[in-house]
Length: 95
Image (cartoon, rainbow, N blue to C red; front, side, top):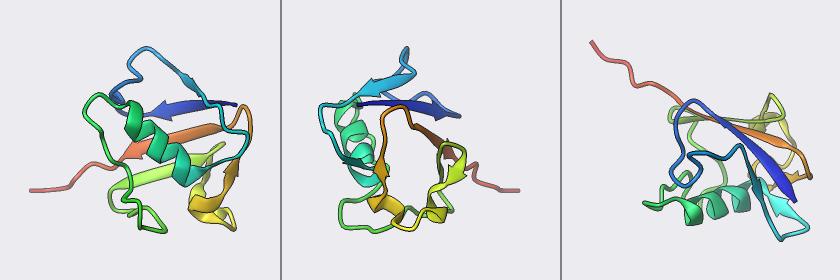
């Protein structure tokens, strides 16, 4: 299964890649992030394994241009071959 990745920052381990290939026939969004963390050179964690959602104050996550929260199953949503996952880190405001 091929999943395309779009981000507003360089994801460690994906510096020159725009997609990832997975052996799994069914891959949830949560498992996608776990696998993405595994290939990251410094083990960047996007979610903690016991969490059921991603903190919207830290990350904006989309599947094919739609916020993942709009999918009925959220992080349990099963990705399809060719899906695009958008990962945006939200800037921290300050003054």
